[in-house]
Image (cartoon, rainbow, N blue to C red; front, side):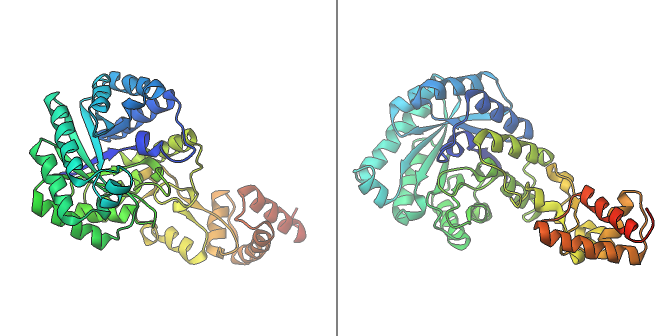
Length: 377
């Protein structure tokens, strides 16, 4: 597999999540964390917005982080001029590629789009900037026009093309075919920008990589417009453990990063969130828990430490007696088979009553009640 780069857009597309606003100090801290975990490029925002947005971007650039700092721009000279004031050395220049956007959003035609690409990319390159040309709504674009779009970008110096599945409408098979055709036809580096409207953002990002894309645009926790973007933690771990490609990201800090972004965004981290959720390494079911006790690889694709989590073995409605004995051994109590069976029966009844697994303290209460009932207290 060719060298692959992660480009994180939590601070741009992630903050475009409806209702999410990062304070300037939070934007700076998120940028620092992303750089610390090894993300090579960070899309930090939109300088043309001015105000706090512009000031936060300037502050991030001034930190001289060990990551490329990229700003987002329309295909408009004034936007790129605003980016130049920040000191950033890389820009994303975004313009619609689909006819529905060109006709019903821009109210223009294809020729105008191609001229805008020429003018904006040429201006950016003349000022020594790295350029990602973003083909917005590429997944709904006419294939031949998308080739023209990409050729225009390449001709005027764009360093890569961002293939945007803006509405998340592709499946991985379609994504593979379209991205491969684009690379074969134009010979330009491609970046994947996938949305999760049908729950396929990560799968589509991986399909693009399989087709030859060498950049993946992600957000922490999958933040982003509507249903969000491909999640950084999912893409990185899937690349490593499914596709055999280590991106160099320090995965042991993924949970720390996810927690911080979750708090800053005001969006709780779901307990079953893939890769970093609390339940990813929580085991209750008797068969599963027994398998994990014998060898964690039976039910864990990677170790909890790999992403900054810890394994949780809990007692609940579906637990077995072996788990009860293991749990009490952690408390320094060795149960007989008969004791474990009785405590399990009581624990299952309580779990149904409280509709959850039990806390350690509750297990001890059950044990103490059991002892009193058997004249041992």
